[in-house]
Image 1 (cartoon, rainbow, N blue to C red):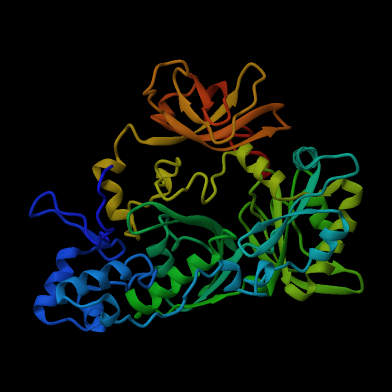
Image 2 (image 1 turned 180 degrees about the vertical axis):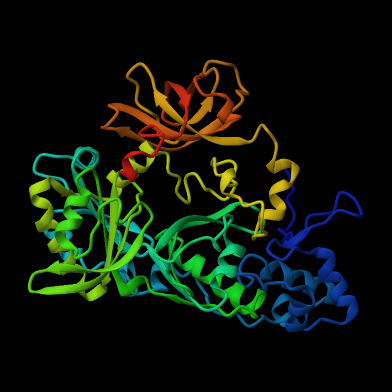
Length: 505
């Protein structure tokens, strides 16, 4: 029989060569040689060993390494392991679940949930809600027997044919006042602002320092030194932080006072061919095309039950249809909304949610922050090169001339229409031939997609290499994860009313 000697602990595997590293603490890369060096240098006390080598100072507090480390130090000193001692263990002694850390402060209690003044009305109408930042916004208003998609399609059709009302109280609102506001706007937006007259509003695009799109929205001139900026719902805080940083750190010499007034105002947008008739029935000013043209803004009153509510009226359109926005003090939002709903009943008004709003903007080719402006796209990629003023400097403009950002092969915004009655796959990439052997070059990707009830087809916005040169080409939208693909025709991103005639009538 084989003679087996006594079992001896193996604290360190013999090194295959002199320079080989034998790790003891995998979190802090402490090696056998580090412990030997600590002994030679006189750091023999266990707490000295710990601090000299960082042994056991990781998140495991030595649970995976200290036994080995103490044994190796004992070998160096020629003493039993217990005589070396142990280090002080610090919490957590055992793993702590993430649920134990917030305790009862979980779910909706982690951050405040924000509701518009019309929230109870939306609930009463059976709205399904989605999160938009911290806000709850109606996704759609399904009727009996309808799915959410059915409801959104009905709402989108009604906007194009009659009139719809959507709660836009959640949009970021920032008041800018002071002598230098016009100069400030010129510095942060790509387009010029010194030509904007009082009582008018203008669409603007902000860039990051690297030239990529940061945010977009409209800014209205309420007085000679008084402006109101609107931002996307999700980006409102980011834009406000950017403005405060610029005014406090970069340009403290500018006399500009910025105040977030998002929660001070309730707002409703009315869109559709019948929008003017509804607005005329609830406000006390002339809203004809001659008196209140596209991109006008002015003060008025809303005729609510038993009161006249001070309001601001804007003529701007996100849907591409004739449209107005009514802003009133937040505590009068429900009264304003009730007046609008009552006045619109005879004109076929329906409320619509974010899903119908998304369908309408895709049909119109409007971009949003996130899907299209994803942090990698410039104004040129999104078809907004003409907005960039050549007469002034603005944040991000100097870097727009970099070779990579002027490369003709950059991905550009286009519209895609599904062919052969196909359905647009979710999160699809765009290729020339789906059957080509890998690696199959990706020409771009779909950014937003929907079924258009007004075109009776699946459509999408996409970023495609040399996209503006490809109008009329037949490509493929492919989703390997969903095992789905469809032939698509490339075209302009605006599918409905490309000349913008509807919103100017």
